[in-house]
Length: 220
Image 1 (tube, rainbow, N blue to C red):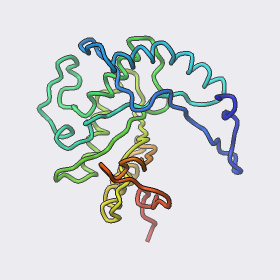
Image 2 (image 1 turned 60 degrees about the vertical axis):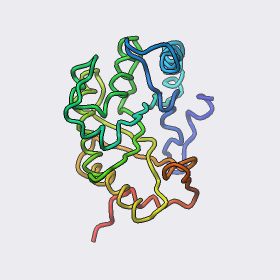
Image 3 (image 1 turned 90 degrees about the horizontal axis):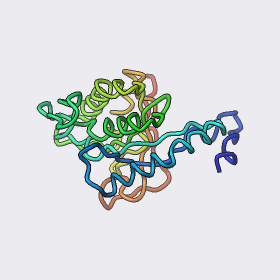
């Protein structure tokens, strides 16, 4: 499969497949994680990831995983300045990185190559009053404050986020990503999820999509 898609390009010469994720929304264990699905994830990655990386690079494809932020993009977690992590003091006050830091540390501790070029994680931002822009900036600031200690680049891709059905709500949400990308080059990409539940529980989306809601507004 890697060989079949590695050299496929669009008419303008851009590669159709730039990255392949071996695992999506992965959560990885730390020393305190009990046996179960998360430790199974760890076994799968340690068993298969290095081989996948080698094959992907040979095909000219960027190999990666993208991490599951879980509740790390909800307001009560993002703005929890008093958070104290029981295992990793670097996460104190940076609760939004609970899953991402553990995932990357697991990879480093097990000799697995961390994704090159950028860190990919889903982020479904839920606000109870703060602006989406404020929450997204804090999430990215938390990433900058913690993940580089593991050798991670300060560059980010969000391969999953909401696509709200209500156009006013969607524009407000999408423009938070556009604003953060305009303010700082660390946010490189965002993709929205459509179905199921792309707009929240029980709310799915289908073509056509108003991708302009996630793009910077045109100049006056």
